[in-house]
Image 1 (cartoon, one colour):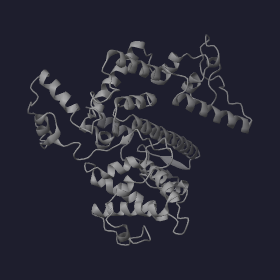
Image 2 (spheres, rainbow, N blue to C red):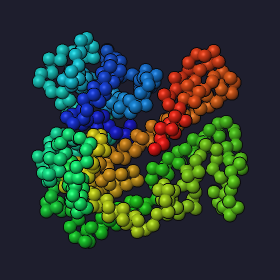
Image 3 (cartoon, rainbow, N blue to C red):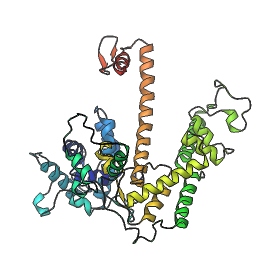
Image 4 (tube, helix red, strand yellow):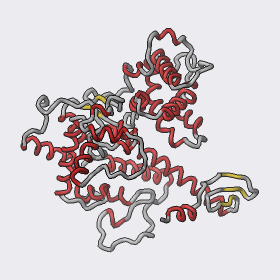
Length: 441
């Protein structure tokens, strides 16, 4: 669970005054109405297993959207409840106070069995500033922060003209305020640096800053090695795990899971590739597991590109420039990318600390501004996609089986009914043909 985004990331959003109030209310409703009430009232005051909440929430239309939040909160609150049940009570009460501050009136006060006044002047969410997360989630070198109003204050902008323009309401009428290409380059640079965060040490104070050509080349070399190290990385470990499960299933069932030869193979293929992947193993996984694959071939498999040495160096230099910008407090993220993206930020005191984490997470990272969170986000997305793939496969098999037996009928808009006309699934509002028509210009 420590490989996913943590609930502290959600707390940052709840604290963020720029985050939409409706989204905050929705998050709090899920936690306070569907998670906290089911905590055991009597000692040891713990929470049910996560599978209980999966069953409880499974029939919700937005299950896939809310499940990641549920898992993050459960991973945090379940550990807190075991370590200190009174602290878990305080956390629940802080969430209630925050929801009330957003306009919600808690009539029944059903989420805790103690007097809220006993907590004194506890401000909403203050408990989360003092409460440690689950073991293994703390990294003292990283101070994760979310956007605040001061972070994005226009008065702090280095370009007053741009700040004034961004304060104006949209009219959707072209005015030509950007005069020419040179002016655009100035505005574009200022816009990339518009969203500010607390910077790390200045280059003069930071002994790890790449101020000399030699130190800069050392950083580039370290990143280059991190990118090209193909001995042990996520995709390879995942491929090994998938193969192990397929082989275990084969051993249990006593079935031959090798490819039946239906695929067209190259006559010149040698080694493992000449056999073809076993059933249930993806071709890319099988190629990664081939002992004869070179590091370059493995890198090409995971990047889907025949990457060249100079391209890797270009990437390293881009990451270095981006890391320097981030250490100066510039996120380099446009406001139109959304509040969640803009507010995602990892704070490091020194450049060396940021670069070290970026190198460690390089197989996942997309932005220098939040290497740890970007890794967590990719892992969470990978887990969600894996869950959806299983659900889609099972659903497809069930639909094919029932339609083949004339038990169900399907319409163009994916509506499914039984032979008696009973609705099984309402389907989409738009069918494929309608979507194609709408997509035409």
